[in-house]
Amino acid sequence: MTQHPGLLRTAPLRGETTSSLIRRIAGRYGMEAKALRSCWQWRNYPPTYDGGGARADAEVLLNTPGRQLLADLCGVEEDVLARALPSWGQEDAKLSAGKDGVPAAAWRTGGAVAGPVAFGCRLCTARRTGTTVRVARYAPRWERVCTRHRRWLLDADADQPLEHFDLLDVPEMTAAQRRWAGVARRAVRAGVEPERVFALAHAVVARWWEQALTWERETIWPRRLHQVAGGNAGTELERWRIVGRDAVVFPEVVAVADALLDPAMAELAWRASGGTRPRVRGGDDPLCHRLGERVDRDWLGPLIAADHGGPLSGWRGAIVRARRGGGPPGWRDDPWHLKREQQPATMAGQLRVMAAETQVRGSGTRWRATVSAERRFHITQLLDEAREELVQLRGVQSGTTAEVARTLLEHLSQSADLIDRAVLHTAAAAVAAGVALEEVAQWSRLPAEELSQILAAGRSKD
Image (tube, rainbow, N blue to C red; front, side, top):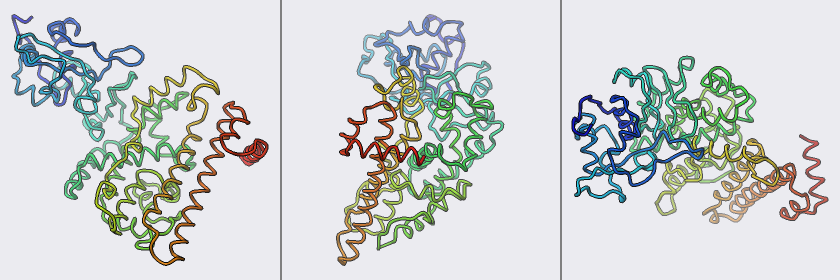
C-alpha cells in the first residue's frame, strides 16, 4: 500500500472529518478501516459511546509525516486537504513533531476539535463520489437541511442509529433553511455574528419546546414530530422529542432570530418594561404577542409573557438596561450573550441522561426518573421567574419614597409567591415519589400536618 500511493484517488468532502476520509479511503481499497489505520502509530484509543460502540463523530489528528501519508493514500495534494478538512492543521501534545519520520495519530472527538459534527447526506456523497457511504462532517446547526434531497442531517455525537430525517412532507423546513441565509446577512449588517443570533434564538425556542408539553392549542410541533418520526412517534414519544427537537423547531428558530434582529422588537421591549419607570410586565406584553404572531401562533403571547427567567428575558433585559444607562458597560448589556445555564441540552446529553434514568426506577434513585418532565419544567419555570423578579430590583432604590416602595414591594411579593409555589410543587413531587412526608416537611420548614393538608388540597384541586 505505502509503496504504491494514490492508486485510487479519494477526494475529501468539504468539512469532512479526517476519520471519515480515512474510512472512505479504506473502502476504496476494499480494506477494513482498522487495517488501513495500522499505517499510523496511535497514541491513544478511539473514543466510544457509553454503551461501548465506536463514536461516529470520532476525529483524528495527525503529525506532519502522518499528514503526508494520508495525502499519498488518497492521491490528493496537501493544500487541498488543508482547505477541506477542518482538523488538518491542528496539533496535539501527544504527537511528536515527526522528526523521526514516523506517521503518528491521536484520537479525539469532533466537538472538541472544530465544532459540531453531523452525518453527511448519503445521496450528495454518492453524487460526488459514486458510492453511497456514511460520511461525518463538521456542520453548524443552522446548516442541517440538505435542500437538494430534503433531508435533516442529525448530530453524529449521539448514540442513536439515525443519520437523517426525510423532509418531503415538511416543506417549511427547507424554506426555513433558505430563509436563514437572509437572516444571517441581516445579522452581519447589524454588527452581530450570525452564530450568536442563532444560538440565542435556538435557546429561546428550545425553552418553548419544553413548555409546549402543557400548551393545549399547540398542533404544529406534534404534527412535525410525527412526520419526521416516519408517521407516528408511537410509544417512544419521549425519545423522539429528544432526537427530533432541533429539526422540528428549526423554522421557529429562524423566525425568532429574524424577529430579534428587528429594531421594532427592541422598541416593543422598551415600551413593555415601562421605559424609564419600571413596572411588572403583564400578560398583554406587546413583544410576546408579536413574537407569537411571527411563529404563526397568535395565542402564544400570554404564555411567553408568563415566563420570566429564560434567554428571552435576558435579551430584553439587556435592551432595556442599555437604554436606561446608569451602569458600567459589559456583557450584561450585550443582548446576544447567552448564559451557560440557559444553553439547551444537546441530543447526545439528553439521551445519556435518559439511558441512565431507565436503568433504575424508584423513589430512592434519581429525581428525573420519578418526576415527570412537565412537573420538573414547572418547578424550574417558577424559580426562573422568581429570579427574574429579583433581578429587576437592581438599581431601583432611587426616586421618591412611594415609587421605590411600590417597585420593591411589587417585585418582592411576586417573587415570594413564586418561591412558595415552587416549594409546594417540589414537596408534592418528593412525596409522590415515595419520600417520607416527615422528611419533606422538615426540609420545607412546615409542620407535617399542615403540609399534608396542603398537598391533599392540591391533589383534590387537580
